[in-house]
Amino acid sequence: MTLRRYALLAWVCAALAVGVVLRLLGHPGLAEAAWSAGSLPVAAHVALGLARSLVGGRVGVDAIALAAILGAVALGEAAAAAVIGLMVAGGEALEAWAGGRATRALSDLVERAPRRTIRIRDGGMEEIAVAALRSGDLLLVRPGETVPADGTLEDAATLDESALTGEALPVELSPGAAIRSGGVNAGGAFRLRATHEAAASTYAAILRLTEQAAASRAPLARLADRWAVGLILFTAVLAGGAWALSGDPLRALAVLVVATPCPLILAAPVALVSGIGRAARRGIVVKGGGALERLARARTVLFDKTGTLTSGHPGLASVEAAPGLGEDAALRLAAALAQGSTHPVSAALVAAAQARGLALPVPARVAERPGGGLTGLVEGRALALGSEAFLRGLGIVPRQGFGAAAQASRGGALVAWLAADRQGAAAFVMVDAIRAEAPATMRRLRALGVRRMVLVTGDRAEAATPVGEALRLDAVLADQTPADKIAAVRAEALAAPTIMVGDGVNDAPALAAADVGIAMGAGGTAAAAEAGEVVLLVDRVDRVAEAIAIARHSRRVALRAIALGIGMSALAMGVAAAGLLSPLAGALVQEGIDVFAILYALGALRPGVEERQAEAAAA
Image (cartoon, rainbow, N blue to C red; front, side, top):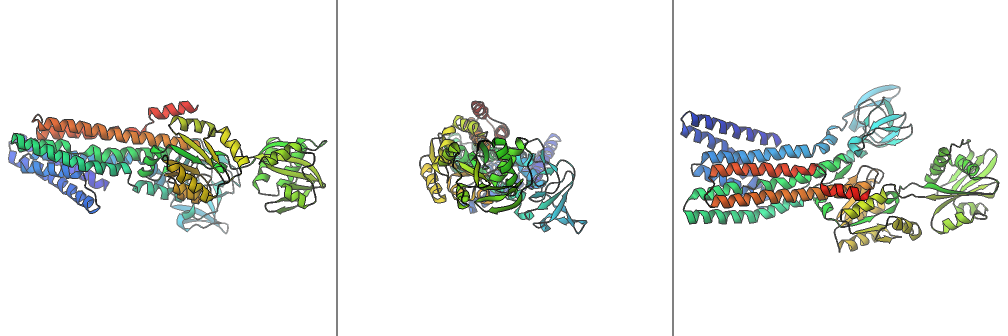
């Protein structure tokens, strides 16, 4: 389609040039024939597009351009017809160029998709198609190659994930780290154990989202079609009136020429696709112009808590140890035993001990009850680590002597209890900390005009309320089931367009029910990413505010481009109706208007004043 547009433009340009040469050589008849030959293929192209629009139930604004070309040829204004043809073909070619520039970030994702990879098997290596790799395959990723599948590192690696996340700095990863497909190997070759097939990988999901974004038709484009009906009627009345009052059909033709509505049919899609492309460079995948426009109109945002406003991973907040043991000694024992488990609380204790520089001995006889706790031996001492119920089941009373931890537990905090030789030894208060960027995000959302922000979570009120208060949210809805979340979204949507932000499987129904669902796709579930119309590839909640800012700027640019283009066309139509513009001069004027409107729409590729003001307010 793009090549056809460029070929059509080249044909019209050549016909115009040949006609000018023939006219200068004193062959006006041949010049007229050349100009007509240049314009009539454009008319046929426009007529085909108009027919397709009518079959699809839409009245296309191309009808005015078709009438102008055919009218110019019929009235002996072949030069004007050729210029109109140049205007239409040039506008479509400019749209193709602008769209290509605007979607460059999305196209880059597709172009970087790996086609082949190296699989290590039986001590040897073989090159295979990415589609043939399976979960469990051991792969070799060479320098400069794109990671073909999600997996676990067998070696240390340096990855450039800028195309996915928008973060420019490479990431250093250690053996055992889980990585996503789509990053580029910025260091030496490394081995990767695939945990998903290529089709089920993160990068494949991103490509599917990209295709949805490219194929979607925006409401603003449909709005342009609705305006087109009124513009066609207005043009017909004005052209007919000018002809009737003056008796000169050339006045009607001049009105048709300057009424050719390229700004209306091109400016909105170019601006919205520009916004989608700019969002993609920041790690924000928007599934089409429709989602972008709804995002721009939203005034209420609902947030899930765990994994969205908080990190989703427990961290050690405080340690309370028995007299004579000490905090560091208690943490050293607990973390040593915790090495035998992959539970998030165990991982948090080990991380806290390592951060304090504590050397951890190797535990023995480690036994784990899922969801309960651990038992084992550390340096000859019998230890038990876990929930209060777990220790009580072992005949141990964990709370005795630990008043602060007991109070924290009653307040909703997660507490891991440690017993040594069947005596309570320590209590570790764990918290799911608020994301560092969350407070600034809330301020920026307020500055962008979001009037209401609500926390909707399945957690208890004791855990949810402090988060809502710390972030100064307007309401906190705790103990919410997935059905409750849907009801909350629908209730808020009655008052204003609503966004739901979440990351878990239980958030997927609410994401789908909202006007716009934003999924925390970097660390969230596939269900949330599929349900959301916007997917954040970066595990940062501040991208929510950035997505809204980009959407509002893009929509504003689109509306301004349409208004300016149509306003200038309307003024030119009045001048043409008064007989002050010939058809040829009108065609040249309209060409300039088209170029201006499309270039103005490309302003959506740059940050707007409102975005910078909101960013400053959040600082």
